[in-house]
Amino acid sequence: MWRATVGRRGFIALGLLVAAGCSSGGSDMTGAGGAAGDAGGVDAGGAVPPAGVVADGVRWFGRVDTANAAGPRFSWSGTGFIAQLSGTGLSVGLTLTPSNEPYLFKAVVDGAPQPVFTAAAGAGTYTLATGLAAGTHTVELYRQTEGAEGDSTLTALTVEGGTLMDPPPGPARLIEVIGDSITCGYGDLGMLSDSDCYPTESDWDAYGSVAARALGAEVSTIAASGRGVVRNYAGDTTGTMPLLYPLTLANDGAPLWDFHIEPNAVVINLGTNDISNNKGDPGQAFQDTYQALLQTVRGKYPHAYIVCIIGPLLSGSDLQTIEGYIQGAVSAVNAAGDTRVEFFNQIDPQPSSTEACQYHPHATEQTTMGKQLATELQAKLGW
Image (cartoon, rainbow, N blue to C red; front, side, top):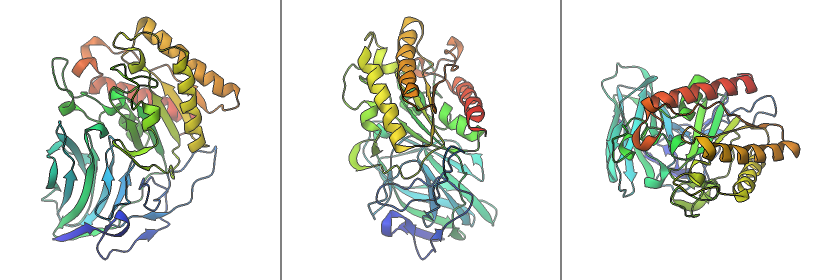
């Protein structure tokens, strides 16, 4: 067996060469303190960022803190990596901070999704693939538990019957999705009668991931259950999504994300928690803060196409109120000269037959939403 431990710069290293300037673009999202990876190509509205360095052993998806040489840390939904090996299996060492909920991860082996597995807090070793035919294989790992539950640290990779190879290049398309529990996939594999939604949470089955796979893109998800634009589901104003957006890790104020990779598109699905739970109209502050978030995103990503959606949990006057504010914010930035922002209102209301945990959209509806979003992005970006 070949075993890699996390070495210098927080990358997986044990005598492997670092591959530089890889072709085809990609979206290695190594974070603050680490070298940039292959850049996700932007659309025709701007130049493609220069290619960088692919980390030894793995290529990351999403935001990752690589500053600690003891191991790269990741926490946001859907964050993970792809590795390529010549051998018959792959295991990982993970250290997970204490949590009230189980940690859920999903492996994809040679393009085939595997069942979600549960990991315990503390240090452990987990088999992602075993018993493979001798030869070259790819193994991906995606975190399904959202960031608020705690951090994950990758400490080791162990290859059965072979060695780790340079990871494959990523696609030239990258989508960033900003949202709340709907975007996390909160309870989307569960039932309305479930009392705890976290054990059935699946970012893999959430609309952002569905859309990205349909478009041959990678996705970076920045989302947290119960969070709003100006106030959260519980009515408090602590840790709203505009405040969390700059973070590399959901629970840690440092390091801040350096935004070194520009996505082709940014999707924002916020506003449900600002008005739900009988809180009433959030007022003009919602529109003003939403507009400020749009301006923040544009400042980080000069060429990205920004799509604003809301849904599918709101209905009636609550939906009309939030839609009005979002449309107002979008109109304001359009009038100021930013025409690459739109309000897309084709995310259908949730049919009662597919309600999942705590009335959240089931995976079947998440799939419908993802297909709707993919169609819109394809039309606007020419994909």
